[in-house]
Length: 190
Image 1 (tube, rainbow, N blue to C red):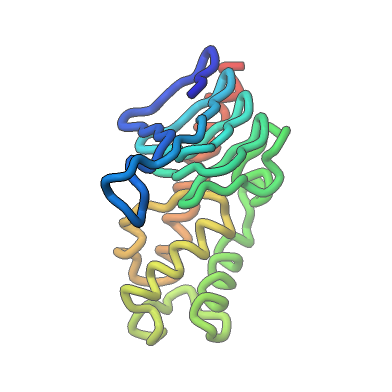
Image 2: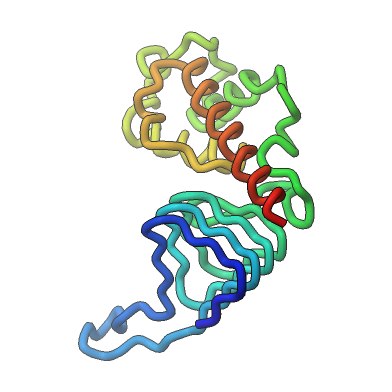
């Protein structure tokens, strides 16, 4: 394991260079693979870094993410598994770099993700689980993953409390703003 200079770790970060045992024989040790975290990396709260991961210099990993594989230098990644935000590698932008500052189409984009997730027409902003039959507990999980992928954010479990599409939009907008604040902090530190 190698951790570079100026790396910042949020609370409860876990870095593992092994699986601790072979999946077929719990008494046999598992081979380890080195973890490399380069200079200036920022790992948010509750990030898990798995064996063999390589996080490039200056990368930022969003809270609650699970990192496996390679994160390019300067990239912003989040999710389970962590994925690089579109347009973030080598840029100072994060979620809003592809969302557009004050994007008036945010609600329309959330509606499109809801429609794609549940295989329905474009829902009304007031539509929720009672109007969309597939929007049950499993559907909420699929929707969470779809929104995280579309907007490059890690959404809170409170997403399940959203009663309609407009409330989903509010949750996504709040996380995009939070991601932008984290990115601004990261860039100010450089």
